[in-house]
Each structure stands twice: as structure tokens, then as C-alpha cells.
Picture 1: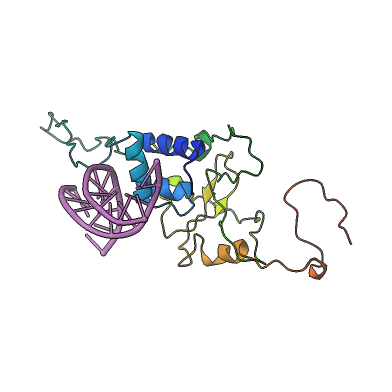
Picture 2: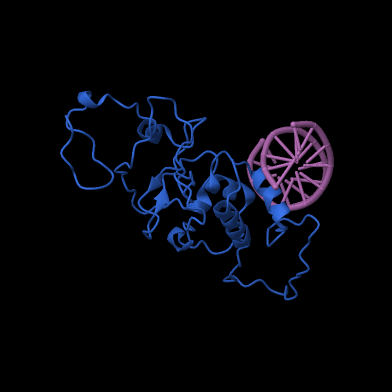
Length: 203
DNA sequence: CCCTGATTCGC
DNA sequence: GCGAATCAGG
């Protein structure tokens, strides 16, 4: 994997936003480890920002007014307020108009290497859960990163169910993501096409 | 144990 | 330059 300008920009952005290295690693995908993120961040000159860690950098802040704790004391979370995912600027301008440049999308990176005969399904008609939203902040190693909705929509979120071990998705979405590609003539009606008008299928 | 970032060190 | 291994703290 290479640190493209897009990735570095994303790294900087997320890092400055206060995301943890592991979160950034998972957002950027491509098997990036949190160590890689930290290492790169270091090399970029970013380091030890408002993070609830105090290695080498303690908080010189002391709560002077400690007299009485107000019951309704609002606690400023160390993490920045969870901005809507859609608000995050998605740097898509490809400075290098390379043909077929494999630029990983900022969200929901498709599984990179698929076995021949396998191909990721375009976009599932994902059942939208009501109420709950799994945002970028909630992404872990072990929750399903299947995107629900469109990143531009305010309610864009992720599946969030426990993953199928070894996969970035839960079992259900692994079935969708790693569907075996059937021979065309065996496909009866044909699956919905992601883009473009429904052209008459070649026969 | 889980998590976090920092640093080292071989590639 | 990169990142896994390792370290150190919470």
C-alpha cells in the first residue's frame, strides 16, 4: 500500500480531529494497522495531540474549582463531538489523473483481493435499522463495517453487528459481499444494476 | 484484559 | 519511508 496524498490528508484530518490511531487505521482500510498510522503520523510531524493519554505530555490543567461537584456538571468529553459523517470532507479530487487509480474510498473500502470468480456485490438494499446508528466513531475490529445508506445522507451509518471472524463484515453481509458470481445465463431476472438505465440485457 | 500512543528497529 | 514488534501508561 502506498501513502497517497488522499490518504495522508485523511490521516492528518482524522488525527487532528482526535480520532484514535486504530479508528483511523480502520477507516483508511487496506489492512492498515494502527501502528502504521501512528508511525506515519509521527513521520508527518503530528504527535501527541489532545488525547486522553499522558505519555510524555501530561495535562497541565488542574481543576481549580473542586469545592463542590454540581450534579448537572457537564463533562467535556475528551473526544470531539461526533460530527456527522457526511460533514467530513471527502477529498476526492484526484491530483494525479492516473487511469484506473485504485483510490480507496474514505469509507467502506471494498475488499481488496477477491478470489477469481468472486466479486463484491454492488450495493445491497440494506435494511435500515431504526434508531441506532453506528458511525465512524464506533468502528472496531470486530464490528461489521458494512455501510448503510449513502455517506452524504445524514443518517449514514454502519451495520455494526459482530463480524465474521477474519472478515470486515458480519456473517450476513459477508454473504452479500463475497457472493460468487454466477454465470450470466444462469441469472434469471438479473440483479439490479448499480448505475445507469436498465439497458436491455445482451443475450 | 481491554485500550491508548511512543519508540525501536529491521526491512 | 514503512510498519511490526515492542514498550509504557491508563
